[in-house]
Each structure stands twice: as structure tokens, then as C-alpha cells.
Amino acid sequence: MSTTGKMVATALCGTEMKMLKDKNLQHQHYPIIMGHEGAGIVESVGEGVSTVKAGDKVIALFLPQCGECTSCLNSADNFCIKLKQAETHLMSDGTSRFTCKGKPVYHFGNTSTFSEYTVMDEISVAKIDAAAPLEKVFLVSCGFSTGYGGAINTAKVTPGSTCAVFGLGGVGLSVIMGCKAAGATRIIAVDINKDKFEKAKEVGATECINPQDYEKPIQEVLFDLTGDGVDFSFEVIGNPETVAAALASCRESHGVCVIIGLIIGVQLNISGHLFFSGRSLKGSVYGGWKGRDGASKLVSDYMAKKINLDALITHSLNLDKINEAVELMKTGKWQVTHTIFMSEYLGPREMVCGGGGGQGSHGWRSHIQAAEGSFRNLQKISFPYAFCFITTL
Ligand code: NAD
Ligand code: ZN
Image 1 (tube, helix red, strand yellow):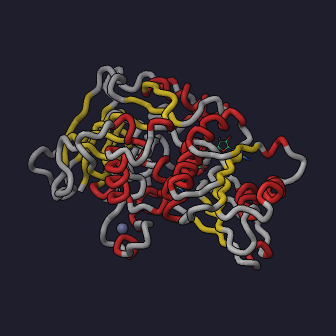
Image 2: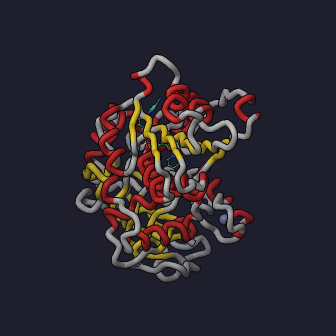
Image 3: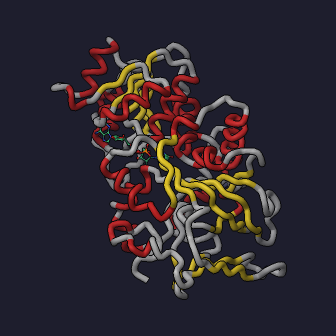
């Protein structure tokens, strides 16, 4: 039960940058169309799809909501079992819906948003308000929801509390927004790139510190600043060492540390002693929101002016500038989040939609063919950027 969507806006998330370094992905699932944060318009739907129709505005979801698994049926849980589908880098029926010169191209994160058109399962799209501006609300697809919900849903930040946020990318800034909305009175932003501080203050940080400015470990600096540690800390980098530091920054008696950063293939080295006094360490995916319900609700909140996404967007590029986006991200010169617009990008492109009205048992199929001239700019992307389309075909 798939849907095909025309992507309108997508972003480069810290997760893509991590995946660039993931040798397993490069070797086993390549070529691949990366991108998991985006919004678009449904172009057509397959047999059995009932919750969205052509023309609907939708948010792409790396975290599906099947509505049937134990997580989906548990109101306190959001880890839909179908998320694991993403590990296959294929659709739920085991097929790829992208081909290039006759060869299959892998999907990514149940979404593959770095494409003008993509095919997603129905459970991986959330229908949103028809009036929502896609070039803003696409941030609800990952970064904003993950950070904001990490503070509100996972940590359950309390009014009057003190928080520390490690890592000030788009996700970390959204954590700050969540802490502020929950009524935290002191929000200490931590990053090794001081260029991130101005924006952090703009969205709610009360002070900003750079660990490199201190001789002593950052957790000791935070204890010096607060007296007895912070109530809530957030690791939004994806580094095992900063997880340990964030946990150690918490109040001994009741501090809560939430890991939002992606830690891939690395063991955490944390002293058990840190837990003896009552601290806790929690994981969080998509900010604790259920995929479809959460995305629709947050877009409604944006339309009702309850949340502000605009501050998170500092660069807007066309898809053919994706190399520039990656370089900016690598050097840390970018400020927050890139919007990558699809609409003006590809020239000649042929989209073949098989099945038509009488779809077979596998439902609707779409092949984005690399017709002459299509993806030509992306073909210049060299090997380290294996996440982009079709460099070796
Ligand atoms: P980002 O790369 O934009 O931001 C990371 C920030 O951390 C940068 O500002 C960088 O300067 C800072 N940093 C790096 N090393 C540091 C250190 N040692 N001490 C202090 N600061 C340091 O990334 P992002 O897009 O904001 O994503 C952040 C993390 O969240 C990534 O690991 C990403 O994979 C993860 N993520 C998780 C989920 C989830 O559902 N749990 C969803 C999306 C993203
Ligand atoms: Zn589910």
C-alpha cells in the first residue's frame, strides 16, 4: 500500500552525515537515494491506500505508524515495529521502486527524500493541513519533532528546571525550544562551535558554553555553574563521550539524561556508579511522537502559531547544490538546517508509473528512470557521498 509523492522540500540532517561514514551502508546498500526529512504532495496512490489521496500535502516519516503493532497500540510508545523495515533499504514488499538504467537503486529511511519523486508506504506519510507551507513544515519530518519532543515527551522537562543541551544543530536547537516551552528557567547550551551560540540564544538558551574553553571536564564546569548539576541533560551529537559527560552533568538524585544523537556501532563506556544515586539515562526516537499522529499535530500547532519553525532554516539550496550542503555541514559553517528544494531542479526526467488503475497484487509501482540528462548534476558527486543517487551506474 504505497504512495508516490512529489517532494517539495527536504533537509540534510546530522543522520545523513553519520551515514556517510557508515561503511556498511556504503558497501551493502549502494547505490541509494538518501534523505529522510521532507514534505511533499501525493502524486498517486496504490491499491488499498485509504488515508491519503492525490493532491494531499504530506510529511515523510522515517518512523512509520502502522497502527497495529504493540508500540502503535500502546499510547505511551512510538517505536513502530515497521521502522525496522528501513534496515532493508527496500519497500515493505521487498522491492525497490527506483531504477537507474535498469538496475535497482536502494531506498533510505523508509522515505528517500533526496529525489524529485519518491515512493513510500502509506504508514510512512502523515497527511497535513492543506494550507501548510511545505517549505517550512518539512522540519516536522525529523529535526524539529525529534528535539522538541525529546524535551517535552521523553525527558518531560518540568517548569523551573535547569537543562543542558549538548550539540546545537537543528535537533539540539529544537530541544532548546522544547525545554523553553516546558517552562525550564535555565537552559545551558553546549557546543564546540561558538558560531552556534547566537542562534541558540535566539531560540531560548540562557547561556552558552564551549567545552574547549575550559581545562576541566564539561560536567565539572556544569556542576560549578549550577551547584548540583542540571535536572535534564540532552546528548544531541551522537558521540559516546558526550553521552557520558551529559549523564555525569545531571543531578545525582534525580537527573535525567536523554540520548537523542545517533550512536552507531559503538559501545558506551559509562561508570555504573553514576546510576547509584538515582540518575537515569533514556533513549528517544522522533521525540517520542507517534509518526503520523505527531507530525499532523505539530503541523497544526505550527499553523496555530504555537511553535515556530522559521528560526531553524538558515540556508535554502536547490538539490543540485547538495554537495555544497554537505561541505557546509562537514565544516560546521552552516548554521542550522538546509532546505533543499526540489521543484526547480531536474531537467529531462521520465517517470514511469506502472499499473495505472488496475494495479496488481504488489500495488502501484513507480520507477524513476535515469533518462538522458536526468540526475546529471548528481552524477558528479564523488564516492564519499555515496548517499546520493547513482554515481557508479
Ligand atoms: P548536527 O551535526 O547539525 O549538530 C551536531 C552539533 O554537535 C554541531 O553543532 C557540532 O558542532 C556539535 N558537536 C560536535 N561534537 C561536539 C562535542 N564533542 N561537544 C559539543 N558539541 C559538539 O546534527 P543534527 O542534525 O542536529 O543531529 C544531531 C544528532 O541527532 C545526530 O546524531 C543525528 O543522527 C541525531 N538524530 C537522532 C534522531 C532520533 O530520532 N533519535 C533523529 C534525528 C537526528
Ligand atoms: Zn506500528
